[in-house]
Length: 624
Image (cartoon, rainbow, N blue to C red; front, side):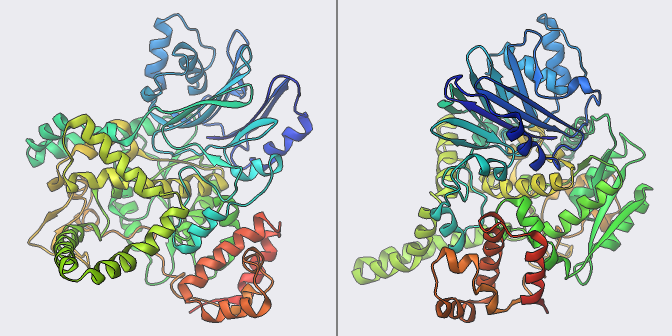
């Protein structure tokens, strides 16, 4: 896991100053504290900061060049099937001097001329430089686990793992549409757009080719629709319950083995929930000395007792960090700095940051997480009621149509009241979710000749924007502590299984109440719980979902004076009286959203010191 940066000039007329390239290296030290590599020549500059996990020898440092000296690779991530790919390359005559996945990825790209990226299983973002053609090949993994930002300027093209690294190389003009959509209720991060006009995001599953500093081609090499296979779905539907659980047991164990490949210790996050618990239970089959870490959100949301129970069951020592209300104020600037934008959707970013700092203190560089299980196996409490709501909306829609025929004025009221505000927000975020959803459904229909049932489509939908926000949190805040987060539930084969798994194996009714407050007689993530029954006590396998539960933001009271002489007042060009009116009129929820945006602006536009911002927040914010 690393940080990457590159600059390609239009033609070979300019050489980036090495002293200027040291700045991106310094800004990404947290992503790669073990080594910093810089290369500059006519028309090109490459920077890599390394977190050494595979092949700790300096021979695997980057930028990594092939034997001919033509190609150089800067790469961030892990290719979990690199050993299989290496065997294939050796058969084709390639020779290797390291035991890293970096060298395998480089020669794989050369051998396949930048094609066949769908065969890469893992998480990655990389830039491949061809010195003969003065060109770049950029690509990002299928889920968007690893970030990749870029900017196309009049003189050069730049890319990086973090957008703040690009700010000193571009015009820092803000994008009012992205900021406006956030203010209206969209959380982000976006799939393509940042808060800056001149910084774009390479979407997941995309590859981009840049010749002489100009983007010449961008294409989607993988889409989520490719996971859907009607034949596989029908074959799984014919399996009985035990066969389905056996299949998942096999796939998850294989995934965890791949995700534990490392030349340094691999640990695990222990929330006490069933997802991370089953990952840890199976990981102990690979390593009997697994280091496990827990963030205890002190108060009524504490899951410490469940984490302790799990650690005792597995015979492991539990490392715990306490998270208090004061942390939810003090850590806002630091989290915003690394997150890159307001983290309104994920207040649990606070305990996540604290636990990764704890991991770093124990000299562990990589951690397993249970992330993506809720998306793959439908673990969110609102999902069982969607079908009921859909039925209600269908009946309501029929009623609207009937009323509209006899009372045209009603049609106008319905259209204005139900669609205008949502459409306005979605227009500002360029229909981030709506277009992606439509394209996904259209692609599935074109491949299969028919639509997928809404129940079966839920997993695919959650693997899009919703999952991307979680992966962004994990990457940004894990790397803030120089920690690589790994996701066994996002193994390619396992996701294919989850997508095509029949709905009855994810959510089903039960005669017994298991503790879900909203649905006491419905079992979510049924197949995970049945698998967990094989390895965990039932008190853990049937625990209801919580997931770093926090309510500090809900109890937060923000004084109106926070918005005086603020980034908010500057950006919206408010007078003193207008800022006062905003602070006194806004709801607590809206003030929270504005406060997080204001912190982002103070960091990235006003260049305020993080500790100074934190002091101001403690002055104007209380948590009751």
